[in-house]
Length: 170
Image (cartoon, rainbow, N blue to C red; front, side, top):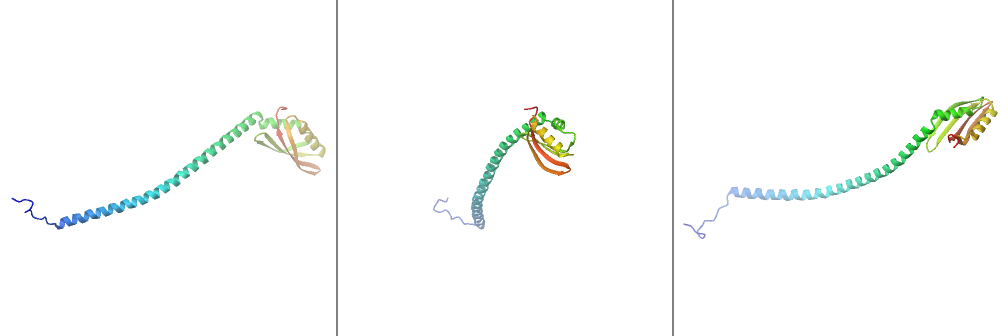
């Protein structure tokens, strides 16, 4: 029988050395991977901070656009209401009732904003007919801010006029 004192010392074999070397190599690779992962973690955190800043900026922009959109919605609703109250045919009919016989419309443009703005290009056979048309527009309860534009008086008068529709004698 053998006791502790007489036991033979174990011999290290080549297989033990190879296994020990592989374990050391695995430890080194593991340490290298850990260090690399930590450095990547720092760059990922920095990128995350940038993305979070972009998201916050985008949300702020979205809120400002939402506020602007509500203002645009109100303006659109106002325009729709004005269009219902003052359809182009109705405004044009009122203008034609004010036209003297010697004045004709060359073009009509409507601008629906806070108020209905009407731009006219007219042609009058005489200056007196043009002046009479301006007088009728100015006295009409349906139009306000009547502003004549440039005039060309070469026998006939060609001119523009801009005004706001008040509607039904407001």
